[in-house]
Image (cartoon, rainbow, N blue to C red):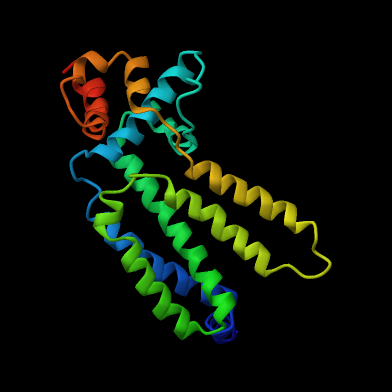
Length: 227
């Protein structure tokens, strides 16, 4: 009986077996490449997203509205809860981003597998793609942007589309909702100077020429200025 369960679980056509392969590849590529940089120092892009997350948490926890007209930051908003915990926020946000990226990688594997029908081809293609997509020049140290969060919804939409039959027309509504969420999570419209001015930090960093460098220092100013 035990042998029968084992053979069913690890059959090449088993859904569980395919998931285990996808998860293993995602962890050994996306997870492995990202975990090394979790504890690296702050840098501009991560500083921007971390500060937006901190700003949103600060406003919501004090009964204030999120600033309007300056940015749409769904990813920082969804991760702003980490500031309610007495932990390293930088590392926690990078860990969250790592888990999001691993999830997106698993979905990506399944999308390619459904199209190619070949486990070997999918493995080679996805491993190569994930190694390139998780290059440090692209992701830096994690939580650099919301691209991987957007991937989760876009790849999920593709998986739903691949499962559609002629009688499943209602699934198109789900696909539309997933694509919309993917776009909204990716969109981060922002005016650097406007946000800096609205948060009363412009006078502290006005001597910094690059807005990107200024953004990278905002979080550190707000977090460490009292130490």
